[in-house]
Image 1: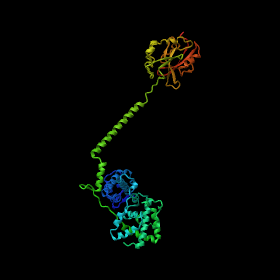
Image 2: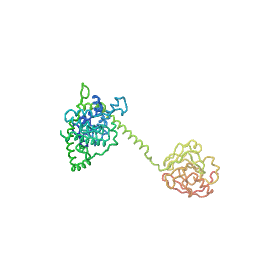
Image 3: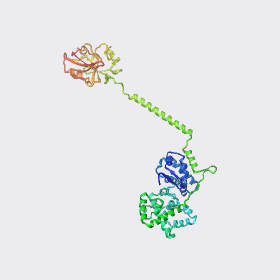
Image 4: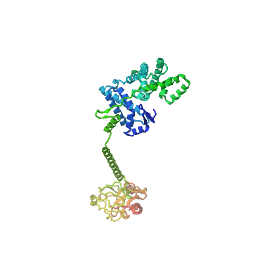
Length: 192
Length: 301
């Protein structure tokens, strides 16, 4: 992602100057950051924490923690993956607390697939896409959904899934290849 | 999930001939992108793939989930996420204006106090380690013992020390004053009390003698770093006849440099009663050498 400007899912653009102000401890920049990243943070948090109230708490805490730990943030890098790491860690903390301080291994990793697949089924074109998606094996399907449907960058996906960046990139590539092959096999050329 | 963690078997390099989707999405590195564009110019299928993904990806993006704006805070006081975040930061980190001012005052007070302490320390240190005004005259080597010129020692439980050229008095001492009168001496040689007898136990000395009570001292002179301060002179002694006074500092007898109290008996042992000797000594502040001649005598007899 470009270090100068960072475009988020909401479409607004975060300038490098905003990030510098954030690093300098300017509380007002949080308005910009929250407006820009709350949707992606909520999306990720909701996949981990099913409870709506807890999701809100986690996202709120994530922004507070990001502000507290702004010294650890490198203003030359993208904000979103860093924020999503915090969201993910807070979600895992929450799940661990819920399960009585059980080990991290006991916490079931979230799946982003069900809610995205459900959203695809809302119209005819989506159902055609969903039928192809059903045929793609995991973990490729989840990567493709997160990348091309939800619009997270490969770096974001690596952070929220806790995976290696290069592996993530390759899985997205593989998923796209599979999707193309399956689509041509079933529907021929693309017809929207 | 096991498959996800087991990524060692998965290749890490993107297959360029099938990278149309990654190209359209902008996931390729600049190098990969340039390479793919070269490949694209030659391959018809790749161009079809690019067209496919160019249509697919905007279509997929329509199904993106945008979570609805949540209500934070309580039902009675609904807040936006930004407001909730601000409120939480203010609660945990924010300081009121008064608190900020008080904290600033405390800091400046602390800084001022440490600066004052530092300056005090520097001033005291400078005082403590300042070079003392150098004294240009006499320095005691050890002022509790004086020595007769036969090498024997007389204990001087002195209370005063020899401090520089303007020595007001050498020893004001009850023990010695019962045996010898107190000698007062200033650097100019005035106010010298009459010289008197040396202690009785030395009266049986046979052989050449000068008749002086001496104290080795350090001198600010390269030629003579050590000298023998004359503390007392015996009546009728060769030293008195040579014109020596208490306060003079002997540095040489004939050509022998006196660097220790043992030099006098050693030097005199070479001579016999009645020989001429040359005494080199410093007198007063100017520290110039005087040469005099005398005859050694066994004055105790």
